[in-house]
Length: 61
Image 1 (cartoon, one colour):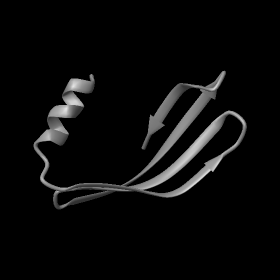
Image 2: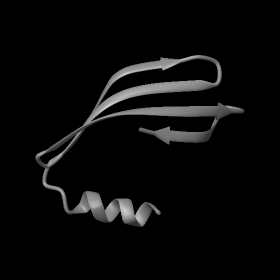
Image 3: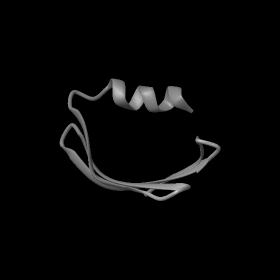
Image 4: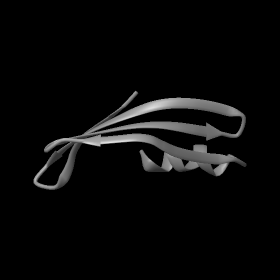
């Protein structure tokens, strides 16, 4: 899976990630972000669930 992501990003000339807001409670982290890949601008939201201080699940929308 990571190789397919690497191939996407290796072909980019411009890659910029900016976290806008980060909120966390005891077991969940929410990250609102902007991502620019060349001329394409995306807005997204990560939801990360934690268990025993390790990432358990991650959802990106």
